[in-house]
Length: 213
Image 1: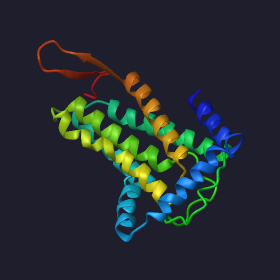
Image 2 (image 1 turned 180 degrees about the vertical axis):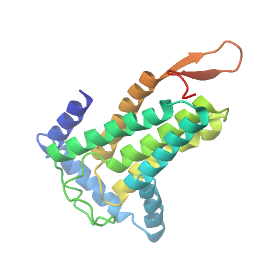
Image 3 (image 1 turned 120 degrees about the vertical axis):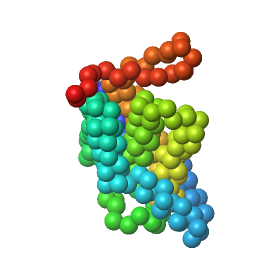
């Protein structure tokens, strides 16, 4: 159902809305291009790297395997497999069924497929990595939540970087963000069962499933 919804949004953007939303987004892309400077180019490269597919897969595997071995439970690895696997599946289907041209500006990230603008894979990857990291830290460690909340800004940086580089339209990154948030929320509810303890320790999470011991 979620995949069908994303494909439906893509059809609207490449069809009925191409002459309205599409035109405004092209203007926004040109505005971003006009703001380019060497310093911002470097910042955008960092934001793009944080959503790189290969780097994201490596980070997610390290998190999934590492926490599974450390806490002796299969749940972290299962979350990574189902969470990112689902996002990757929707991305592959959407890019094939809804080919959308990238913004009409110079693309700083060379070598991209010209009509794979929708949705943004980098946005989904950075969101998945940050969500997974925060979820596992908050579930299995005593790390302070406020100290880690700044990590939530990473997907925003990636989104801005992709638009700045001319790789994606605004609706490409917003759709990818919403998709990732909805899907990862569903997988979290499936594999993790939160509960509030009245002992004064605050929120903790109890994981479904047994240990590997």
